Length: 215
Image 1: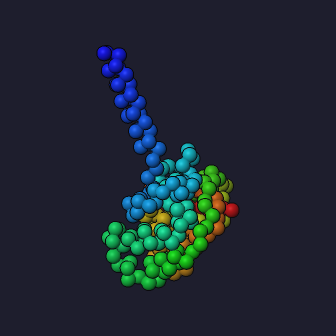
Image 2: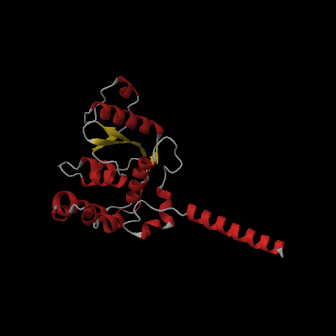
Image 3: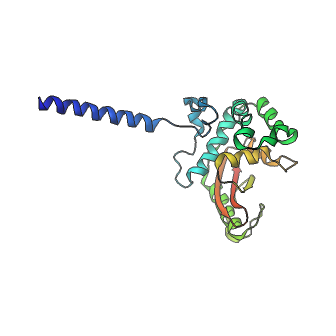
């Protein structure tokens, strides 16, 4: 009898291990709060930085979100952007034609774009600038140290200030509020295929995120 119970306990333990393994292998999309459909297996290919060791979880998530937008622009507009004003408490955006509504229109018409692949040279370029500008409390793209100038590596660059959450960083740059040229939006929705992201503390703004793009 004791062998029978040992057998049952063994089966139960194996079942628990299998269940836990199943849970750990189930990916939860950073956009799942807006729609469970983002957890569909087809979007897993967008998580191109998952195995990278030189970026933080938040930095890799910025790339993940950008790739989800590139993969399915219209679905992002319908599930995330249209809900964002209410979810974020920024209800005023619903009346903003130039920045917010224009982004929805752009994404609804946009065809899928190439996915970004993480690039260490781009990361080092972004990280040096984010750290240096944050420590010294300045904004802009110009490198102010020789060390950062020496490893500068980008064709396009976005700098965001005040946000540390990956989705907030991406939406801040995409909506591009206060930037009449919509230059950040143009860079994020371009055909660059290499990317590096660094999020660092900033002396004046709390946080800065630097995103460097390359072909």
